[in-house]
Image (cartoon, rainbow, N blue to C red; front, top):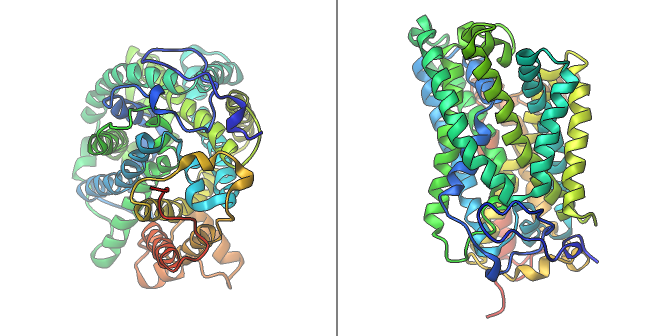
Length: 476
C-alpha cells in the first residue's frame, strides 16, 4: 500500500470545513473540488509577514552590499517579482492535476523524487526552527514567560493547523491577512516615521561594484519567495479544474510580492538602525513596554504560526512524495515536533545566522528543480495522467530529471554568493565556488539564473531526445 492510499477519504468539502484532512498525496477528484480563487492571494500574503522578511530588508546596509535607499528598493521589487513569477506558474498546476507540488514532481523525477522530497522535508523543519526562534522570542518578550513555554504555544497552534490540513490553513491565512495587515499597517506608520536619514542613504559602491551589489540583493529577495515554489500547488489543488489559470497566477504573484516586499521595505527603511536581531530591532523601534510594541510582538507570533503551519503541511506531503508510507496527519505532527526540538537547538547557541546561511546555500537547488518541473509540464502540454504517480514502486527512475537538477546546481556554484560558499572555497580551494562571481562579476549572484537555465536546457534537450523520460502526455 502506498502513502497516498493510506487515506482515501477525509477531504474538506467546503470553505470553513475544519474537519481533519486525512487525504495524502492522492489526486483530488474533480467531484471534490471547491473554493474561491481569491483565497490564493491570502494564502500567500499572510505567511510572509514575518521577521525573516524584515531581516532581509536590513541587509542592504551590510558591508558586502551597501546599497542606498533607492537601489535597495528597486532590488527588493525586482527580486520579489522574479521569484514570484515562478511560484505563480507552479501554482496553476494545482487545479489542472489535483496534486500537491512535490508529489506532482514525480511526473518528471520518478523515483529520484526521494532526493528533492527529503531535501524539502528537512528544509521545512529547518525553517520551522528559524521562524519559531523569532516567534517564541516575541511572545516571551511580550508576556515574560520562559522561551520554551512561548515556543510550545506556537508549535501547538501551528501543528494543529498542519494536522487539520488544507482548509484550516486557508481559513487561518484568510483571517490573518486582515488581522496582520492591520497590525503591520500600524507598524509601517511608526517605522516610516523613524526612518530618518535612511531614505537619503546613498550607495556605498559605484559602477560595476554597485551593479553587482544590486543583483545580489535582488537574488536574496528572490530566494525568499522562490522557496515557496516547493509548496505552490499544495494550496491550489482543491480548486475546480476549470479555475482560471491566469487569475491563480496573478493572485499568487501579488500575494507574495506585496507581502514579502512590504516587510522587506520596512527593514530597508531602518537598516541603519538594525543593531540587534529583527525582533529586538522592531521592539526597540516601537518602544519597549508600549502598546505598539505589544501589537508588534503579537503580530510576530501570529505570523510565525501562519508560516510554520504551511511548513508542517507541505513537509508532510514531501515526506510522502519521497515514498515513505506514513499517514499525512502523523507526518505533519512529526515536522512540528522536530521543528520544536530544532528551535531549542538553535536557541541554545550563537549560530542562528550561520544556519540561516546554510539554508540559503542549499536553496540554490530550488531554481534548477523548478526549471525541470516547468519544462516537463510544458512538454506535456499542461496535462498528464496523474493517477499513475500514486504508486511509488511503479514510477520510472527519473534519471534525466535528477541529472539535470544536479548539473544545474553544480554549474551555478561559481556564480553564487553566500558565507557558506566562501567558507567552502577558503577551506577547499579546488572547489570552484564563488570564483566567477567574485573574480569577474563584481560579486553579483547569478546562481539562481544559471542553475535554472542550465537545468532547463539539459532537461529539454534530453526529453526531446527521449532520454530517460516518460510519455509527454496522457493517452488520448
